[in-house]
Image (cartoon, each protein chain N blue to C red):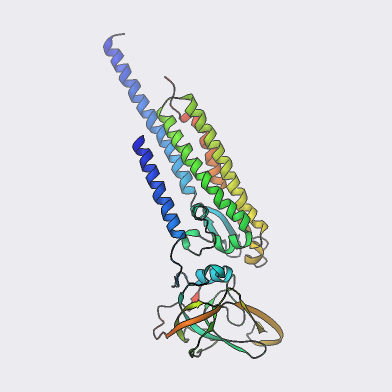
Length: 195
Length: 177
């Protein structure tokens, strides 16, 4: 092969590699941002069909702030409706969910950092660490979801729903869990290919 | 890489510091139109965290009579049924007032109008123990049913200062979450 052709081939390989890096990084960062945005969804809400919506609720970010500050009884808007009714009627489950959100988010940030690194460098080790971290993250979000739902074991529904049997407690923490598992699977394809 | 790490750590330090600062914020409370219902409700459920704090709020005076004919002057606003809201003929949320001086008499009691005796109160909770007031129940048409009783539980408020409010146009007669 002539040297000119070799140079053209090298140039093409570099451009392809850069393009691949851009879209892989884009997908990786995009999914991570979406997961962080999903923390604005209700970690727990009382859904009442009588009013066609949530009577009371709090977001993942409110749960995080409550968990970090240890303040589950404040009426500040940043805490959502944690104090009343969730902490008052189902304190144990509510507080566990809030506290569990802290290591879940830390793990998510670690997994995100490793995923970005994996997209930049070709390393089998990084690929599998990303896979593992996101899988564990998914499990953590599942636990957060579980403790959100378990708050129905308290007396919230009987206090709030006026006897409406269609009233329920919902948690949207399952959605970031699903995305974490998806990210875990995708990480194999989003890491940089070995040369 | 090092720079990104430093920035990430700095952001997390600022985030956690502001969260701790929020948790340790000042203990006095000035209830406004946005916070009145939520903070009042929170006081009913967690009175111990408001004990000793100076509370300022705007309300109208309201008189409750128990089944034995004892009268209580309260500082309240109207609310919907639900947590924090006391039943009776008029759904209200607020405190039973304790004051050395004379509290302005209620006006247009039980009429659905914001034209009441509005006052600005400053003071503290007497204690975390709620006062149970037994009143006669009401029928759906608003008439008193002397054969049935209801119990209203309210916190007691030691009033330091009571200032009449002439212009209550900016105040919400009816408060919700």
